[in-house]
Length: 400
Image (cartoon, helix red, strand yellow):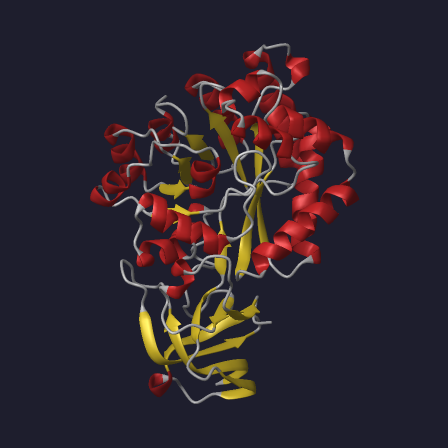
């Protein structure tokens, strides 16, 4: 078999057969045209005629990591609000006083495409140094048609100027802009009738998200957004049950959402609905840590009902200014008591499913994009165990 490149002498965590990691000792990966053509035991590989062969000397290879929930394109920062929270203010109080998402909206609206690109690029490069090869980026800090489209253009551009795959999500229903004068229904109408059609026509979004919460939008308002997304053929996902129990998990399931994210306050009825819908639960320990929350997501219920668990950095300026997916895994294990296998599957296979990209990335299997992370480690647990250190030897994206 002719191929471009072979990695031999490796130990593989293929993620192809959960609940385990799909461990292969003395493994080999071959790629051509940016696609994996073989991943498995070296002894079972077909005869290969490779233009380049790399001896991995016993190093571990996992799929390239996937950060499936970020808000990484934004203007300014919210360090002052961090000070306010240290002094005792709550997230809700700050948001209702005009801070929170709206403060980032003002900064994002004021910056140019190039300014946003330069700032976001630095954050994305940090994630890449942790082995990230696929990144989801949401809008939601523009809150008007022009600014939402600007954010999504920048997100798309990041995938053109940097060697990684970017999946974009339209999150116009993130917060209420000041010019809405408190009229949430009118703003949701604008999201559905003006913002979303413009975004869809320009081909800037791969999915639609909403923030269903007491400080954001009701289940009824969120359902209107999801109905509009259906008309444009866009899959949906949802910020659900982060601060209160509003039935967001059930709503996500009713619309066949790719994922329901946060879920700290989800109840068993909501978890059962996610299981029946095949919706992925995306846990965000960075926000849990940064907001000093005490209500943990119902991990035992997710396990009991067989809901796939993904984890993500939730990289954003206000509630999770986190740009390390390795640290995210450590947080998920420490705070939420996820196992090593759950953490690693949560940033590979299950994260790919949460983006609707499992046919393309997330496992080491023939036919998929050759996105690899090659690690200087003795065992996979080191990727979850270490804090503030990346043992990444090499990152491979689309075979390069």
